[in-house]
Image 1 (tube, rainbow, N blue to C red):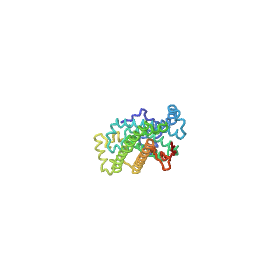
Image 2 (image 1 turned 60 degrees about the vertical axis):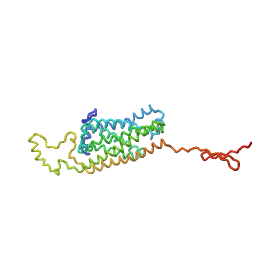
Image 3 (image 1 turned 120 degrees about the horizontal axis):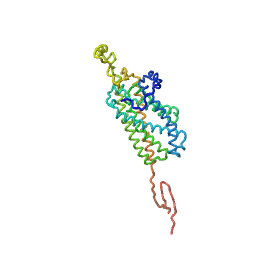
Image 4 (image 1 turned 120 degrees about the vertical axis):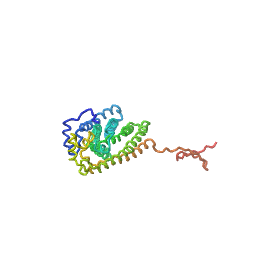
Length: 347
């Protein structure tokens, strides 16, 4: 599948990033750097202008009374809502429309590349770069957990430009399917709708999507990527002397037929190179993936606790009243451990 992004690569921008791409071995970065940059700029503008303007228009009282710290958090949630909605829709469409991606074996899943998956990689990398910058700027507000998430996510998606497990870019970005509900849950609190029915229904959808997309789907796909990377670590490249193939003899035979003796590197494997995965790359990628999955399980527990707190509340004491007459002629009325006394009046 060719890159469906409406704007083609910008030649001068691709040329400018080429030295960095060569240094990092990000072969496809020049093809998608314009998407990274546009994504980063777009989310910066949403936070700086779109979020404040629309929020003041839609919620003039609630938004303006927020402190500077909470207003920053509000604007970041608006960006997250926009990003998760757009990237989820695009990823689902690519997974449905990209026939080449559907038919990939483990080699293609590790070293393969399609333009559609590359677009998702570029747009996601731009957002996670923006997220990292904002988190570092306001580390006291967002904390070390969010910093670890931003670093891990950017690392995982950047490796797709080698390309390395480019196939899984669309797969893991579907973690974001739960993000719209998470953002709405936060907004309900700030709009004085805590404990309301809309927040309850949204909370149910949040827990369902978070559990199914991040814990079930995410864990299953993580196992798959571990298996593919393990196979790649023990793979003998076709061009390696260890493969036992006499390339000189093969080239001589192929030349007489007017054909190429190179391995069948169709467009999917055009950037595969030596089909070799360094140990450091596997450890870094899988380590970042483990960090993300660990955070997901931790956050799910926090979400259950938060939702329960909003809708169960403190246990209500049952009011009971009891009457008794003491020997001294006084009548005693007890209500919730409060003793009320009154003297009987004789006729």
